[in-house]
Image (cartoon, rainbow, N blue to C red; front, top):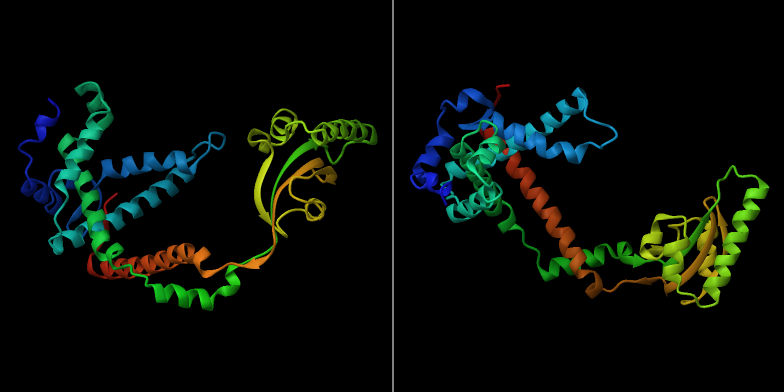
Amino acid sequence: MVLLSRFAAFSLMAVSLLFSQPSSAGTDAAAKVGDIYITSHELQREIRKRIPLETSFHSGVNSEKIEQIRTAALELLIERAYKVQYAFDNEIPGAVEVLDKRMQAFLGQYKNPEELTKALGGETLEAYRASLYRQLLAEKAEEIVVNSKVAVTEQMLKDYYVANQKRYFRPLQFKASHILVQVDPAANDEVVATRKSRAEALLARAKSGEDFYNLAYYESDERSRYVGGNLGYFHEGQTVQEFEQAVKAMKPGEVAGLVRTRWGFHIIKLDERNEARQLSYDEVKGQIRETMEKEQRAALYAQWMSDLKKRYPVTKLK
């Protein structure tokens, strides 16, 4: 509560002034869109957020990769600033209640002012709050200009289904589990024989009624072992020929093997077989709606961004 008390006199008018006028923060800005400054702290925060998503533990982060991440982060913040400037110009109010809740959640992560100061990294609490407010303004503007205008009627859905029926024809489908006894493609005959003998023993255990899930979990040489060898659903043409030919000849509930592929010897349990058929309108209506709404949203968003880029100049300061 002590930390929150610092916001008591921070009025909405003060927030607005912070956004629209060059201040001491403006001299430390990374870019400016119209009258909206993108602070260096915002840019660094976005870069830190992206680094774990765009790098791996093994690859590390070299200077070239950091520059790519920085460029992408700045472009995202420029796009956000377009939305904020639009919100100001069109007098879209910010959601102050939501802002307070997000600030409370942020402050709740830190046990004392020292931890908070360290986390802010030189940014003032008021500046962080202002940045968060800009994010909310951008979200509100996008909701009004883009999301609220997405509209798909029942007739549009039906017309789309009729025009794209081929897209909703489901080929022969299987659901299966397997146990793999891995064999190196370069293995000699003696090794292959040993691995085959192990696979035959596992096949005998599976056919005798031993729980397939547990058998796969403890004996399979492939990552699907952790889900009992479950491969999920796959269509005709989605797996290697030897495996597909085997499952085509099986009945649901049946265990078969050994099936040799380039990975080794497989023991297969067929769980389901669903014949090829045309999916009905009711089955795919939700999927079609999702597709059409996504397409509409993308078109509306692209047009909005195009208009904003023509209206507001961008100055990259760093």
